[in-house]
Image 1 (cartoon, one colour):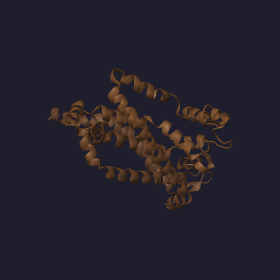
Image 2: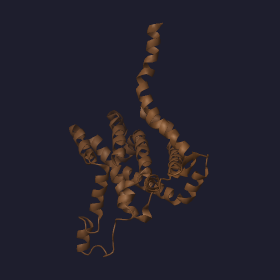
Image 3: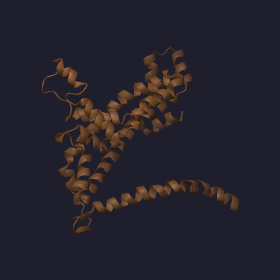
Image 4: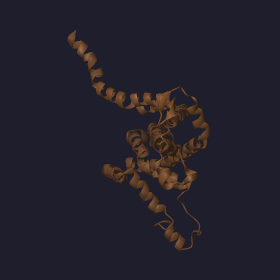
Length: 288
């Protein structure tokens, strides 16, 4: 019995290190933040557990516009990532040949640089007298007061640029898994290229699109660096508010409540998205 018992315990022993890691660095901090979000007090007198649920209602009523802006920017940036990533991933998967790894490396190469430095470089590109707007203004193609920085467009552009690989890689993996014989069979049945793409390639690549949207939309809505560097006071996202409440005002309960409110909104949004897309159909397509 010792041998079969050890074999039965082997899978659990293998997952034990990762499980302990998640317990210590994810579950425990999450529980502590839940407790903190229901406390009252300040940094000088200390915080006490009073189950103050009003932290959630106050945060949502006070910063509701920031939540809405974060979701809106997240939606726009995610759609832009899909529009840019799918053609690139499709070209690499179908036309890359032996140089697929090289193209992927070149695509990911800028992301070996710090996230903050990449965002600052984006700011230098979009500045009024930078390499893009400066020549256009000198040629008289832009009005004197035209600018891109401190606008929602600049924030969405920075978010799209910084989170593009989170969309490209899942879509590329899904496209790479498509059996070429399925595409050849569709052509043999006199399907046009558009019909092959719409009826064969796109449905089979939906698992990658689904994963890419989830991996992109969630961190984009939580981001605060791009809004801080590229946006202005009118483009503040909820991540900026949470950051300022934690590190600027030391309002830990309110910041924790805002964090969990954002988490709940994102979970509901992902659930609705999964139901609308049809998670079961996506998983069935992935198994094929």
